[in-house]
Length: 262
Image (cartoon, rainbow, N blue to C red; front, side):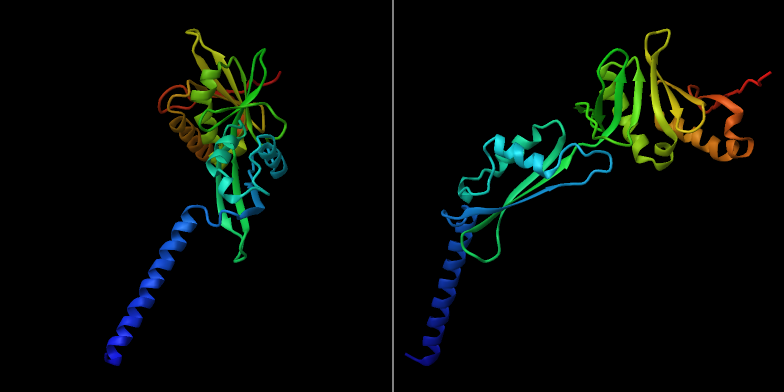
């Protein structure tokens, strides 16, 4: 046999063995790696939220322990990452969870589980007449009352939870996302008109003026109109000249002048 043929055969065998080794490694990796590998490290991160400090890493760790799904010390093959995600996402303060396994460096038997938690972001604190307060996020999810939310606009008055979830939630999210209105508006007051329909009045952070919205239909268009009026007119005549602004009517800002004191 010629040397060239022998070389080809050796090369084929090496390549074949390499492919077999890779497939074996890939199957082992997909099946969970070394069946005796133990989780020696838990990387737990709770994303910072400028509007809420509902939970921290220690609380999440305790939740895992109480639910008997705490991964550290368990065999990696026995750790169900989906179960961990579902358990944590059931909490009212948590919006999403990502959990996955990874190899801790190149040391055999050194497993690591990573958990990343995103808190819900409240957009309105709802304080109905004669009822307990609660928060809602942008999706309308009700969040239990807590002292750990901050810089949130407050809605008071006659507020049904359905109205809070379906209309106040997207409206509050809009205010929170707009730096101008987020700095301007402190309170949302909800009352019922003659037809027993909810109508909204906004209370600015500075001064004693009010902005009457009427219904929250087309709220973005209404506030855009008010902002243009503010930037083009009120900066010249002064904000304090008026006591009330009415945005109920299309393409208008109806102003009520402040009564002069005697």
